[in-house]
Length: 232
Image (cartoon, rainbow, N blue to C red; front, top):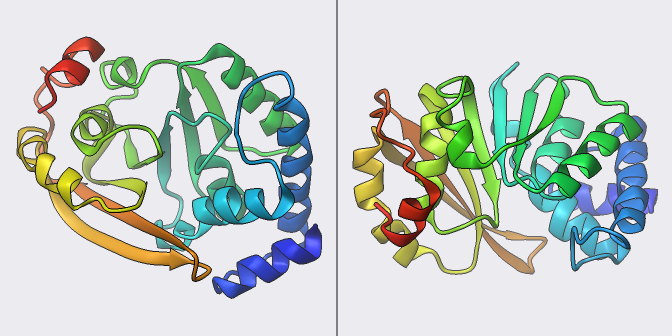
């Protein structure tokens, strides 16, 4: 597995240290074993996990500023938060996950990988945005969580002014971008960039980057039912 890890990451111009390879290998074994009792991922083959989970999560890690604080919404099995942390030890990570069994997995994973500066909290994203976590992060990441209008209402309140939301997306997202234009304005933010790339010449991906330019109105985030039934 170590050799496959190095080769796949090298194709994306990422050089892994032996210590990082070891952490990813332990991560894989623990994920697959834990997945037998808690539904974490449908992908369990070695190459699939390496490319579609580990590499997909870590490929944008170099874009984060030094010593940044990052919140990850709906962390689930730890993607993209844990691969980012393995690649970028300087980044402080808070994983926000509402499912208690998955939070337990994440807490055990952190210990298994001997990671510091990373934690998992059992909380809904909209609750986090109204808690002491509000406006305290440089970045908020999410991967395969929900459509952009709702995702922005979960994410933007957690950001400091000048902080950035990084939304990992797959497939065609132009319609999502258009539907999120009102949310961008309402939440005191602006679209910064859209990075489209193909992961190892096979999997189409997009990274939507939204920058927070003003403090978010305290009415947001609204209760989850309103976010879902009446998106901005």
